[in-house]
Length: 109
Image 1: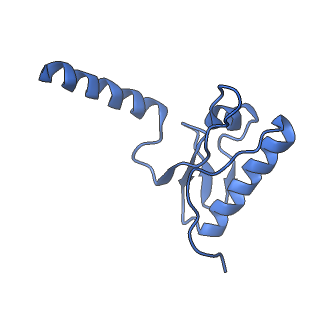
Image 2: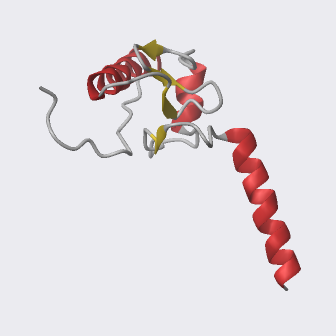
């Protein structure tokens, strides 16, 4: 039924708009969900208090903590430094190693 499909799509998009930083400059989800446990990477980052953490033009989203937003003129080094800060903090506070979902291409020079 096309009407049911359309309604389901609209509901899914409304949910995503309320839980993800759609319309903002991001690379999508930064970290894979850990294999152990049922807690998402975003929830873990949020639990250790890193929502809003910023390195120059890169920031952990206030909407969803698994997204890194470009809120200025973020450079690759800003994003990589923010990723490292998140990984270090999560490892120290939760003893969890977060792996990247995004793929880093090239070398920082």
